[in-house]
Amino acid sequence: MDLKQLEYIIKIAEENNITRAAEKLFITQSALNQQLLRLEKELGTPLFYRSRTNWRPTEAGKVYLENARKILQIKHQTYSIISDIAATRKGNLSVGFTPGRGIDMFTAVYPAFHRQYPNIIVEPKEMSVHQQQQQISQGNLDIGFMTLRECDQTGDIYEIIAKEEFVLAIPEGHPLGRQAAPAGEPLTTIDLSLLKYEPFVFMYKESTSRRLTDSIFRHAAFSPVVLFETSSTSAIATLVRSCICCGVIPYYYVKKDPTGIAAFSLPERPSWNLAVSYKKGGYVSRAAREFIRLASEYWSGSPLLSPSSTEDPANSSGGSQEQ
Image (cartoon, rainbow, N blue to C red; front, side):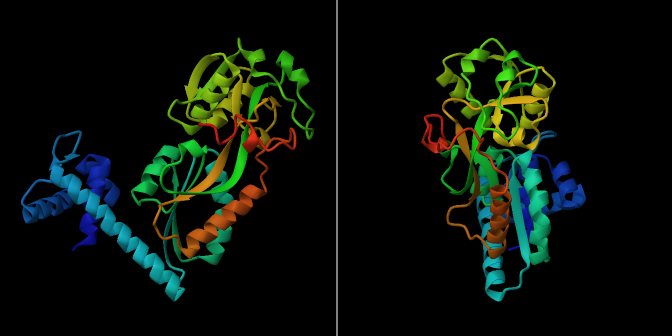
């Protein structure tokens, strides 16, 4: 069986278009089409419904793709196990992380990892939590670093690295801003309902952050004025600094740059988990374990819980256990 052929068919399915697939594979469309036609002739049935804009797998195509992915997963796992047995320190490692904080972590961790594993080819992938979960489940992503509550977890494996609190962020010049604690002091706790007439910017509805934010406002018993939605938590922090809106955001983004923001803890101390995930039943190589260790060290040096009190937010009603 030609493993390269499996990769070709999978790429056509991923791109839903043979032209784009050929570009991603760095081969001509004609060559890719010939590979597909040869395979379909061998199998005696088409694998795709063709159209200019959308190539969809047929029933036979779905069966082929499902098993092609399994074969490539077996190959990757086999090579990883043998590499660890032989201590060759060679191979590939795909690492997922969320936009924003993820690239900060990766750029801090990768140099130290590369010094130990110079012959491991690392493939960084910036993805949403949902995209990472899908790719891990399908065996296309070795490890993924993500932020979520336990109720957002799938059936794969999750190792909790740290807990992170969500805080209220308002413009420093807001009238309530005067109640904010001085820099370095424990954050003042504030009732969210005091901002019920102020505009907020939220993350988009499908994000794990938005699901937690919605639960916070349900607990506060009011529907906020939502100015608009965004795909970037950093954008929310920037808009707060620009006196355009308020936001309920992870503490990381306040800790990273508190300029222009008055931050407050919320009474329930809502939080979520920063975790690394990998496929249940899959093999986690020594290289992957080392990357996880380095990433965990990085986050342990970046406090994520607001310094508002010694209370464990995991025990509060708004914590990561909330369903």
